[in-house]
Image 1: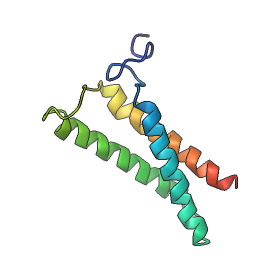
Image 2 (image 1 turned 60 degrees about the vertical axis):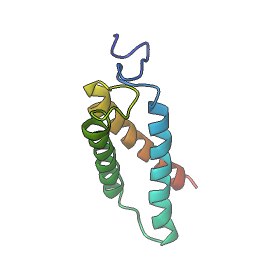
Image 3 (image 1 turned 90 degrees about the vertical axis):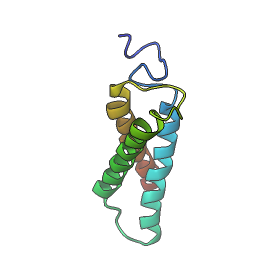
Length: 104
C-alpha cells in the first residue's frame, strides 16, 4: 500500500497536486457546459470528456518530456500518477463541473 498511502508527492497514486488538478477540471467542466447553456444548446458530454482527456494527457506529456528533462519541476512523478491518476482526476473534475451546472 505504499503506492497509495501516506501521500508523497511524485511517489504515490494521488499526490498533493491532486486537489489543484481537481479544482482546475471542476472549473473547466462548469465553464464548458455553461457556454452551451448560454447558447441554449445541449452540451455534448462526450466532447467535454474528450477535451478533458486530451488536455490532461497533453499537459502530462509536456511535463514529462520537456519540463522534467530540463529540471524545471521540483519532483519527478511515478508513471501511475502521471498516466492514470491525473487524467482520472480530470474526468472526475469534469463530471463534477458538469453536475454543478445541471443542478442549477
